[in-house]
Length: 130
Image (cartoon, one colour):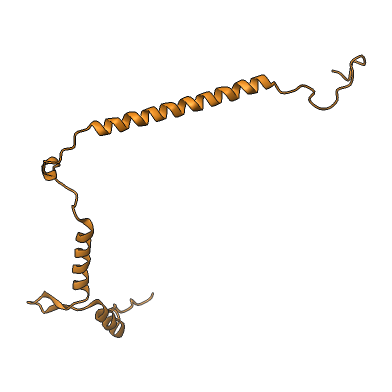
């Protein structure tokens, strides 16, 4: 529209107004206040939960097995796992009877791999192709 009116000065091609500093300042002050209020509330909530945890009575005289029904967690999971692994290793690396009446025995896994490598896997004859 300024091009049509010869009495108006030509536009410079850039924004001539400044940023409203007061509005930006009010926004910054409000943001800082909200962050400070949030931090204060979080610290207060943290202190509240800390005092609530300290007030709870600790029951040390009762047997934990009487407090919780089955199934219960293991008391010593790492030693139990080591025992299971030791038993598995004993079975995998030792000789033993599986079924004495039928003559089925268990051999160490390394020996079984060697025997299988020498003999090969059992296979069926190939079907005739049509």
